[in-house]
Length: 124
Image (cartoon, rainbow, N blue to C red; front, side, top):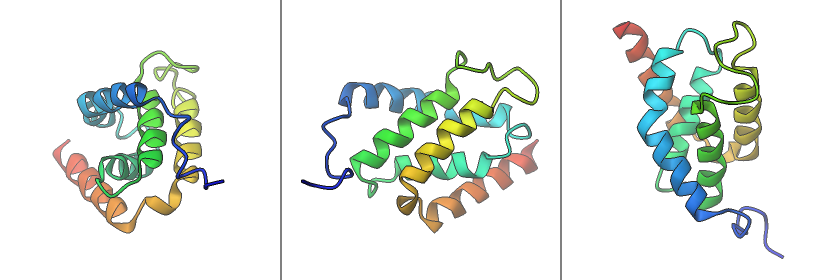
């Protein structure tokens, strides 16, 4: 049997494409509008860069795009507008996804995330 990263049969390619389109369309705006409210901004941004990296395996992209789409969706388990709790479910989903694929989130992804966030903070 192959390892889980080689077996992508459990992933729906259509769902991954829908998640990717949503992330491509709305990720930056969701992050910008919540940059001071989410303590995991660097992690989620590094995950975005990893998902977009052409060198990332399909398994990694599927996991990260699903988690990033959950972050973007306005209707989730705990609505994001609830102060202090709104992003706890998003953080849990993202941290689970990132820990699943952590060896693929490289220093380059993290550096790009830091650079993007610093630019956004300086532009506010």
